[in-house]
Amino acid sequence: MVKVSVLGASGQIGQPLSLLLKSSPLVTELRLYDVVHSVGVATDLDHIDTPAKVSGYLPNDNGLEKALSGAELVMIPAGVARKPGMTRDDLFTTNANVIADLLSEVAQLCPEAFICIITNPVNSTVPIAVEVLKKHGVFNPRRVFGVTTLDVVRASTFTAHALGELDPQKFKIPVVGGHSGATIIPLISQSQPPVQLTKEQLDAVTYRVQFGGDEIVKSKAGAGSATTCMAYAGFRFAQAIMKAYRGETGIVEPTYVFLPGVPGGEEISKSLGVSFFAVPVEFGTDGATKAQPVGPLSDYEQDLLKKAIQELRGNIVKGESHVKGGK
Ligand code: NAD
Ligand code: LMR
Image 1 (tube, protein in one colour):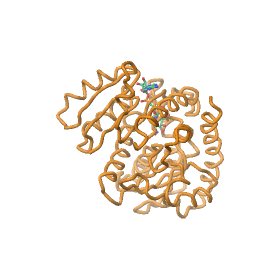
Image 2: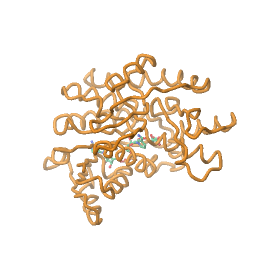
Image 3: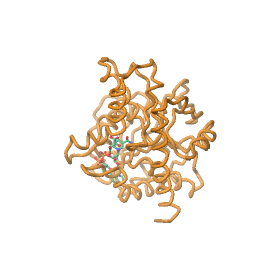
Image 4: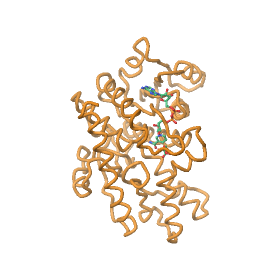
């Protein structure tokens, strides 16, 4: 049974994510923190007849300390979201500081917690989180994750749609790399069960997985970015961690991690030439127990990989320098 904190709990992701966590029998305690409205959001959720005890905190009255002390799993969707015409990197200016400040508190109040970062740009916010945890001397690479599950969910969905299949969950498709445009690499050649797509279908599915975020931003026309599908994906990832923490075996989800610190990850990191990368990760009671190699790639996927690595390197350095440069 797990004590979960959600930072940014009043937001468009925070609220539905908190609802799903409140619905879960795996959660004993749910602490909601935000700079606005979190007490009301918690009161609302607390009327639901599931065991999880819900409490809400604001910055006053040591709210963050109360939300984080003793937390075992911290989900972070705090920060700003895209509007049409923006890239995820445009969010860096605001969200880099949000993540650095929150992680400094996490480092002091619940350094052992599993930390799941949803806030964009994930390619850079995770390196920021890692640098802050290192500064505090509490970085455990097996417990810090960039949440890329939405890309995995999209790969199954769009492949099923392309094939006219009813059940997207039938298709298990790893998605590796980062979480923005060209850094997202769906490995459709590794689909289980295998799928046969025409070149046009492959291009279309790959594009939709890489730019699915933009599709929603455009469709919402200024009202935000992916929220309910993200809450679904974030909960799926949280559930994977919680189930493994409770001793369930065989749990694997792709996630963006500091590869050299995860068993099996050092070799992958060396061969790719990047330190942070999303790969399928096996989970155990202590977090990430093994990073799985990206596996055999088609020529098409090799091309995607080359483009992804270049962009990703810049994103990683940008995040790391934000903390190292003391900005
Ligand atoms: P939102 O604006 O609706 O909610 C963000 C919440 O964070 C707000 O309630 C705000 O008050 C709160 N907040 C801001 N600064 C804070 C701080 N210092 N401490 C605590 N709370 C703070 O945005 P959203 O739609 O929920 O998106 C949140 C983030 O998630 C964005 O950065 C978005 O780009 C990202 N996102 C990531 C993925 C992914 O796949 N990883 C998917 C969708 C969205
Ligand atoms: C997504 O993939 O939908 C999210 O990262 C939100 C965004 O800004 O696109």
